[in-house]
Amino acid sequence: MESAELKTEAARAALSEVESGMRLGIGTGSTAEAFVHLLAEKVRSGMEIIGVPTSERTAQLCEKLSIPLSDLERTPHLDLTVDGADEIDGSLALIKGGGGALLREKIVAAASDRMIVIADASKLVETLGQYPLPIEVNLFGLGATSRAIERAADELELTGPVSLRMTDGEAFVTDGGHYIMDASFGRIPDTRALSNALYAIPGVVEHGLFLGLASKAFVAGSEGINILERS
Image (cartoon, rainbow, N blue to C red; front, side):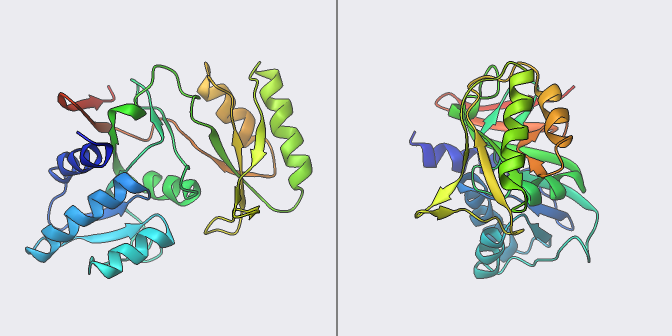
């Protein structure tokens, strides 16, 4: 199957976990968009859910498809979040943020009883880090923050460039008004140590290592759906 078809199959499998009456976190990215389209079909058929989107892009798609929406001010506790991932390992540690929504994605996931990940098999890796790690940073003090990230990486013996994400020749700006640094480390043996080191840098708003948040993943491959669960 093509990648788009695999994403749709993973999304379809996750939809089986959604029940009428749920308060649902709705992720960002191409796989999450496949889920939104399937969810809209269920809503049109009578399923009642309240969705909390993780980005303006997702919110716009949900509104277009008439999926009822709320936010974390009005709906601070969610039953379930369904979202994609840029990388996922066997313990359900993730790299997210390729679409630039990692801060809101992590806030929504943390507000949920459960997080389910949907992905095609190309996202499943033995060790995280082949995909550049997005790090959301404050605009103020960008140069100092960038150097602090590089020093933290050096201390953990991580190598590879850390670059400012650009779009059409200008710095990419997140929905929250921040920049993103993409760290191409290649391999991250100790994700928890890196997470702690990045959180210790004042200019870092959030990073794309999602550790201990996902409880289940539906990974679609040529031989069907592989279900991963965190013990």
